[in-house]
Image (tube, rainbow, N blue to C red; front, top):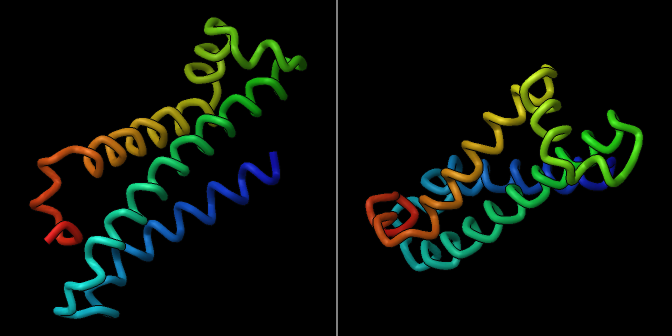
Length: 114
């Protein structure tokens, strides 16, 4: 679980840095926009995968068996009845929306896609 958390935090912080500090570091330089957009897409996908992995690991830890992490009833119980599950459900939803936003054609209105 420690490795999964480490990967997730690293990826999320890199994604945040790429989006927030891009205007400060690059200014009007647009030659790096496409590579930065591609990197952001990969980072968002890895963040979603590591977030789901973290949820599965927490579910297995709470249930006491590895098989329980893939049982929908137990997974929904963790998502709905624990503080971690409530917060993590929103976190994964926002992360999934970010992945969809970055991988669809209507992302051309984003600052990184110009």
